[in-house]
Image 1: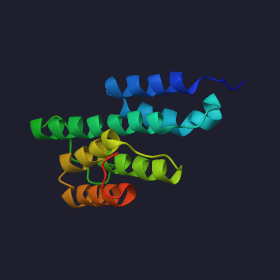
Image 2 (image 1 turned 90 degrees about the vertical axis):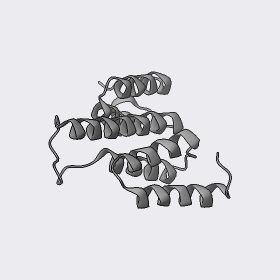
Image 3 (image 1 turned 30 degrees about the vertical axis):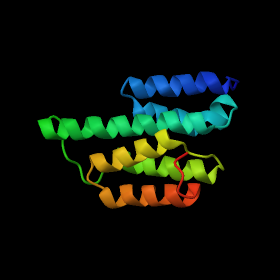
Image 4 (image 1 turned 180 degrees about the horizontal axis):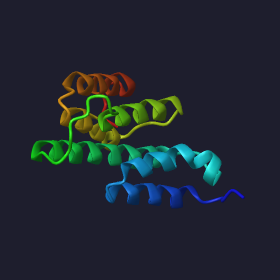
Length: 133
């Protein structure tokens, strides 16, 4: 039987996953929301998942620098996840706020993806008419 849980409860869980270093679980929960919890992701849901991806990217880069993490060029990078979530958020008709844009730009910057970061900045400018939401 499928559980019906409030959007606020799922958002709190996604936020907690991100703060606990489980960005993978945060994104999984977001993806499973409609089927598993009978609720649709809102702007807060995406924000918490994007923040989790940004934190995971920063953690990955720190570990790489310390020699703790292996550099695996074939694996998905968290900055890519953040970009994908931003795209999905917009496709769902939701408006990203400045914290969402900042987190996506920061995730891109962490991996040296400055062209992607500039692209996000440009899209923010076009979407908002030059105003930061």
